[in-house]
Image (cartoon, rainbow, N blue to C red; front, top):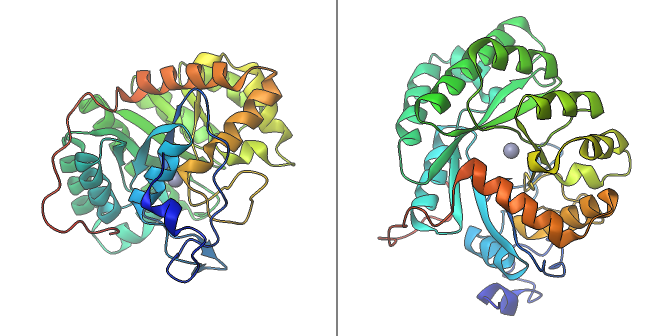
Length: 314
Ligand SMILES: [Zn+2]
């Protein structure tokens, strides 16, 4: 399909997205990107490299290459509100809402964590919000004990909320595999639990799949040094596999270092299929079916027509 962005692309000056990779060849069988941040700018050396492409352009590009829909993921109250609002108007978007574990220590120190969590709970009841995420534990970014305790408490609250609202759970697990699993077992995991941007090896993948949870693979699976991830992919049943971009981060090979977006997921899918020795269309069909089991159908709830000016970003 052609959208306004296609005419604009390459025109240079007013295209903030000059650095975005070109459109890949379209998929024959479509998939969903179950974890993306349409609103986030790529950071380089701690600074925002450029404003992200307008979210509608990202979705148009995605549609044009066979990416049927996305789960737009919030990381704090503000971006979670934006995610819920965009999902309520846009048929190609479902929302996930949460306070990211890396936001938790600072909010706690400011005495605002409970208030923000109450805001997330309110959003969780909204139509087209289908997941609580991303939540979890990040021991890489939070080395201190007090910060980790705060993350753990917040993670438990998010798990409880997912169960209460019967929503999927999207887990951010960085250097915290053991503690994430212990927590899920202690409090009881929601029925649909997803390890977003799965980062474990073969043994951990087996454990996650045997527990009935899902593994979502990002562009990292295409990286040269990611042999353990590809081994993880091999040992799990196909019924546990999801795919995501985590855009604007983790751009798949051959475009590492440039901004990522949902329309680049065909690169990741084709690399996974090649590694598994299967046809990309077979894998796409399986992943789409898995995705709909976790989040429901994108067209189950009708969207509201947009009213008033539509703020492009939070
Ligand atoms: Zn993310």
